[in-house]
Image (cartoon, rainbow, N blue to C red):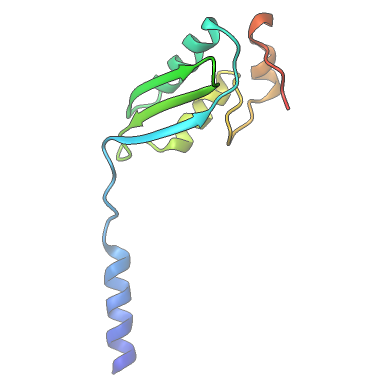
Length: 110
């Protein structure tokens, strides 16, 4: 009987929906070189539904984000920025996407 009660309690907790933050703040590293990169990186981030704010800082190579986690995840932003040709701290851009960047935007890849 005790095992049944414990099992039901655990199952009920699993079904509770985790509350999503509508103004989640993140900071991610993004490689780039110039103002053209800034525009491309921010445009890629804003292409993800749920991104409320995206500001890439050329001097620190980081992007400050505010997003609605009920509409997207931080992984969606990493993928979109990488698809635009810029490596992030989680996702490396495909060589084909990186090669499409203007020569001044091709940063040193590690």
